[in-house]
Image (cartoon, rainbow, N blue to C red; front, side, top):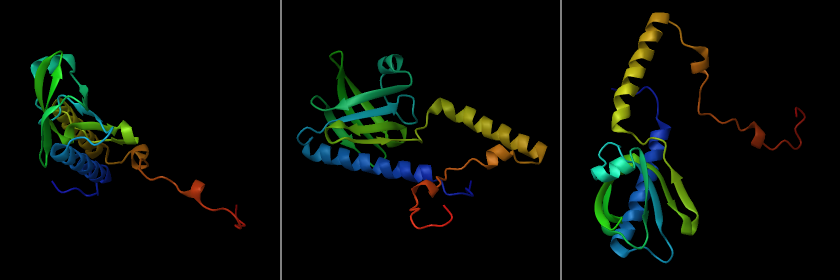
Length: 169
């Protein structure tokens, strides 16, 4: 299906996913430099996420992992990374697609990314149904709800403009 708009949120998320991938690739090749360490939060039921049933039971929605001192077999690909971590002295292999990321933080340098497009497998069907219901409702009403029409992601810049020397202010 062809979109009739530019999905900037998706473009930004993909750019941020690339940043995470590059950081992880560097760590996979050279290890974590100095005090760097990562807090990575992801949707445990995200599309393509592979974790044990034990982890899913304990973290049914989201999980934050820490890559610092004890991580093993970090593998980084274009679409996902995998790592072995120990939970309660049991090693678990986690495979995490970048599309399931919620946040990525390196507190040692006060750097963080917050993702907006993390998708969950179970949420796909209800979301599609909601869209179908909305389209059907619009067809029946033959009018667009004005409150929906006015929703945008535009930030007004008036508050940031230089007002010195302007007579209309």
